[in-house]
Length: 358
Image (cartoon, rainbow, N blue to C red; front, side, top):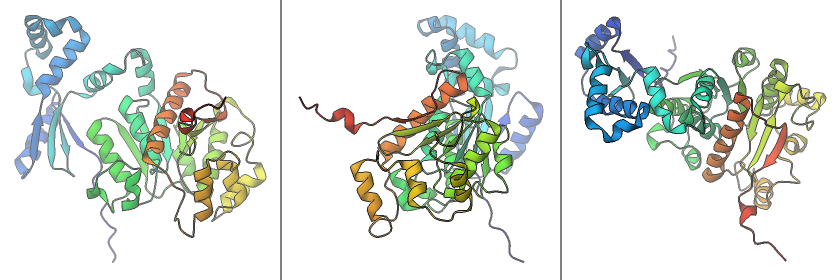
């Protein structure tokens, strides 16, 4: 009998010290643990939390000490915070509990994101299909907590040539991309929830993938998956973002506002059906997504060489990182109900540096 390969660990284990059952589980876990590192800065975290709640305490050591004693109460440090176990690095880290951790970690977002907006965003779930370019979007969402949870769909393993645009370490080569990204997210915020479809987006799992989503990002290469995203997004009235990293092109598709057609009318019903069945890209498909008449000269030149001297469409990390940030800003506006058009936008840096001709 052939055994299935073991799925690498991608989630942290959290022991909530305010809970008796978790304290007992932690003690039992610790008794069996060997060869690990410990990082405990909880006292500094609590002090920082109290200062963010009352900035005057920064210059009042006695007041901070009194506030700290009041915060700890009779139970003291033993019941404060959580121990978080990262199995892939064999590391124990002590952190604030979930609500306090999120409050402190997002404190410096205020008031570009207000406390009320941050709480609303915490209830939102975003889907990402594809974790090459999509990894930058995922990390941008997590860093500022533009949502409270992610669903990701990706089946690829991490290759060395991916490291020009995916911010991860060489120790992760050969692992599924979703493992590398999930670990990176957990190391920034172990409370952030990530759900994974390891087969990618397929005809079998697409309907379930879209359940509960408030927004979805198209960051995949497969023609059929791109069509499937729009088919289900329009059916369930879920907005779609797509950032292509050429000329800073960002598509915002407002299926939540009942727009007609697909991709701003660039894809007909007939073309969508053809895409669902397609195995390869055609010039018509490519032009709908990229708009060859608007592509950068180097992008067009590269496209001519794909399959001969180039294995794929070129993508620079600076473009991918900027695209992730732009898509996150658009996502935040949509999720908060701020104005965001159904449109294709170009946020081109190079054109801003070209000297004007008199």
